[in-house]
Image (cartoon, rainbow, N blue to C red; front, top):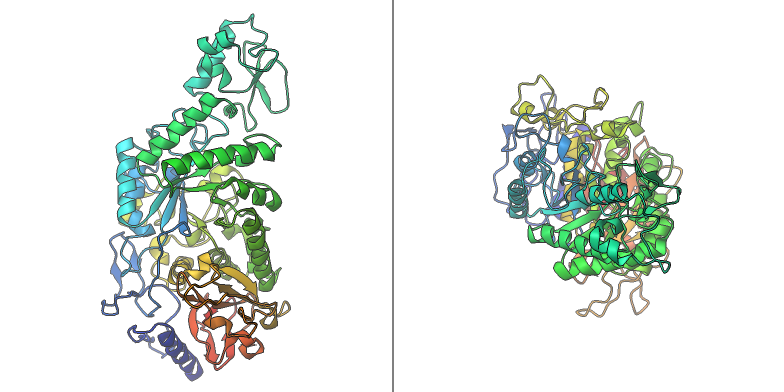
Length: 634
């Protein structure tokens, strides 16, 4: 017991070194004297060292927070496109009017949970962007088949509600991006309905194009919407019958989602008006659905369209952020970066068999995670030097991650997987409820279950905002407690996620830097892996010193003299390079940092993520990492 207390005190000392000017760390012990500092992000951690610490209390967002026990380094949040984005399925998030369906006002009511806009508090997740899944009118619960691109679905509220949400987000420093579905509309959209009725009324029509493939002028004048979709007299793969006619229409997803004719200039003009409409309402960007299907099996045309779309949106708002969903091979979505689109979701790392899950499961070593990051950074940069990766772990189309791990240690794996996602460069995405360890697999409705604010019979104020979830969702029990219970547990998945997001918000180089695997400190057998995250901006005009690393992670510099890698600073963010060491094994491990010359003479323990009460320790260059631990050295 004494050894544990001494270890905790050593950690405190190193955290104080890493957090200059901060108040001393308060060690809280229970009745038998055991260290109870844990690793929950539950302190009044702030650049304002004079702020008061919190005790058990009820926060503004209605959750009871665990006692304050730990002082962490101050935040260093930068307003750019390298953010931490929270994906929200509005239908299942928060219900403000008691009808069982989530709505925009419910999201507004719960913004303080995502980010309260006050860096001196620690009761929010710390995400600084939200992605709203489709909010436009639609006949389906998921709303990926739109009937009006310039309105809000009545189930979710009104345009005024949307405007209020955007303003409330911006007041808190939260950007808002919305889903934009351009591959197809709903079959109930007025454009498609008018085109379909015209074909039914003109059974004599055998073609709507000239021999040269141009629209027939008379038809285009009478019914321009015939050319908003892809109609054919020939039955083809991915085409559906127009009932009552001899015509077929392209609908690659299902009959209720007719594909738009993106070659039609009038369709592009409609899209231009749509993006301008939402940009004028304060939207900060767009998530593009199904970009690999814009032109089926034609990546070149997909890139051409996205290039034009990107240029158009950036002409409306030069700072707009655009992320595309290209659920395909990495080699393909890497090529899509040539379009100028800011980001594409990094599918190679996601899902139950992706790099994140397999490393968290212990099936792959952490050094392979580092090597994969370094390799894709080089690949993406070769396509677009200004790319912003979009790492994610799960989304609304995937089984939730809590189901990926079973048996002893599964909760530890859930935590580590979340951290690995948040350690990746770019704009990291978190699907709502992942921070609680929600589960859901099988049919899509199961993957979009209600946000678990509280238990059904808790008597909490949050009971009223709980959603019913999609009608066809199966009933199943969640493996971990709801938010109001997890908030009180310093070792919960929720508190772990908060601290992982805070790590990202503390060191800008995590999201913005490049990755250099450090193999000399890694061991595939033991489960220890190390990598450097260093400034990506290269030449510093102030020092004329270019950050260059060799295969061992040593900072060589322009003059060829080996320099301490951890002393190299990014000239833009003035951020020291960070060494990140991961132990995905089931046992504590010790690493001799002196094996890597880049460590320098006096490495500091700057931050750590642990799955339980065990802490890392650093004695000179001897680093001890608990099971499933992640340590940041600077």
